[in-house]
Image 1 (cartoon, rainbow over the protein chains, first blue to last red):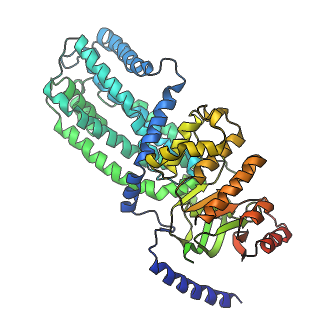
Image 2 (cartoon, rainbow over the protein chains, first blue to last red; image 1 turned 30 degrees about the vertical axis):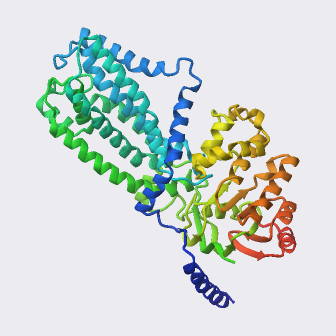
Image 3 (cartoon, each protein chain N blue to C red; image 1 turned 180 degrees about the horizontal axis):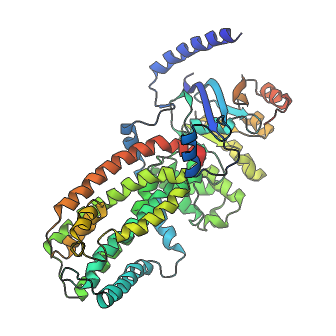
Length: 295
Length: 252
């Protein structure tokens, strides 16, 4: 009986295949992850959703806070004030012959974006697990939206930084025009990490705990509150392999411009970013369905 | 008639972890080293097994089956939310699915803001949406509360908005999972009328419902699923629903 029904189904299959060949098949659903080219086409088609969700994220973030955007200014300024008090007056760090407040703010503003966006990007699948299991859309937009919505905070932070510079009577140099390029590098680096971490974080709750701890340690391993050259040579050559070292150094060069650009650490940052993006895309594509099935 | 959905030997396997609400890294690492799950056999469960069928353009198919039969898994695969473990589905058109109440609604945003967000996720352009927005709001019958945050909506109001957005989308295949039953009588009638209109205009509708009457009223074909397998596929809707109701209840 089973063999008879099997024969019947194969003949049915071939007749289906004929009818299918006549019409163009718009989409095939099978067990394999979507092709890379198809994924990019799909991403392009969802650009409107992207902008919608980003706007939603930004609006929701400020909707029920009384001071709204003022909070975005408050956080970096308060942090800078605390660090300046401690490290300029108590411990007396040298700061590349710049007012310490400006020096530290060049590191704090990008770092605040980085740590916030990495945390949001990595939890983006977990945060949106409900909508993921109920409707189909290109899932890669979730980490993209998470890290893009925080860009507004970064922009406001950069403007505040320029304001503080003017207060100290410093004028930006020509290389400030390169700043967007380095911010883009940081954005892509953040994206790479988010792609790698968001599927594991939706599957294992531990990832979030490890990440929170790592980010705290990472901040002190990045020359944010101290200049790289006060460290012993050995430690310096290790810290250069931290991509955020290259990024923060490059941003500082753009804004203050007292030292020359550290090409070596910058190239490390670019290389790591490219590798992370490749690894992240593969991880994300292979795990997104597992996430939907297991959350 | 041209098929719009062709399913070939679809199977879907899930792993179930009975004693854990969620996995931790420790468990997984432990599993890798001991190379087995906690009780020696993997807890797998086949939600769908070897399912094949073909649905033509303009058909209105009711999908029936007891809880856990695999209806939702099937709809999730057709709407691309999850992938089959093996087998293939060939689609000839865009799918707009409405699998659960308030899909894609954000509680902090207003009804109107959600309307645009939801339509964008369902793949509609901003332009066509701006033209249709008034019509959709009118259809939902909640124009009075359209600028109120969704979190203050009742579940019936959310269902109204959800159905209105999905049914006005451009998808050629519309998947509706048990959504109509949450609206009140008046809105249910409106939904039925709308579904009939969509089918008349050549749209394909897949409808899951435990309300046998609405299946009998709306559908031209019934697919009966039991324990992940296709049990019955018939155009005799009355007969199909009757067989479903008379099938003895199995163990879940």
